[in-house]
Image (cartoon, rainbow, N blue to C red; front, side, top):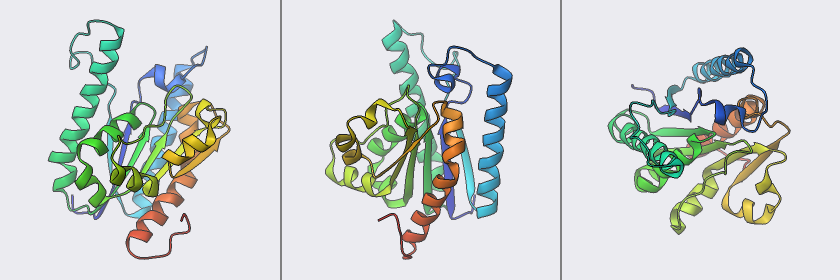
Length: 221
């Protein structure tokens, strides 16, 4: 890949628990159409902008995740597997491309795996990543870096978080906002529709952050 700008989209499409959040009913055909529509929207924007796209589905295949001892172990094993995949992709693909400006977009559980990447590859991430976007439903908690001042400050300057308007972490607004740069509440509980509705704003943020890295004025600051 020779493109200078790479968008990395990390998600668990196919994980109905994450996609449906707390919904009591499930229309699989409708949910599938939402996924297809957003995928087309994302690909269309990336192509129009002249960027490259790496789509990473971290929903684990059962044969690849070690058999868990209990429910907690199952969740930890799945997260460790997904985070290992992200580290591998960063070391063996992303870092070896011509891309000098990388955008990280996390959706649902994929956000935590992005944060694990930031914590494990701090120096190279801070050098090449221009924006970190998290889109989380009520089921997920927006992730933050570990206690490293330089990384936390960098993350605050480069982050954009989209949450449902009723997300419980908006209740304690000051504490929440201190950890994340820009936070956009959207009146939509479904995670897949949340990213669809917020996508125009996400695109604007990414465009401005890339422009800022080239020395242009950034209205987000």
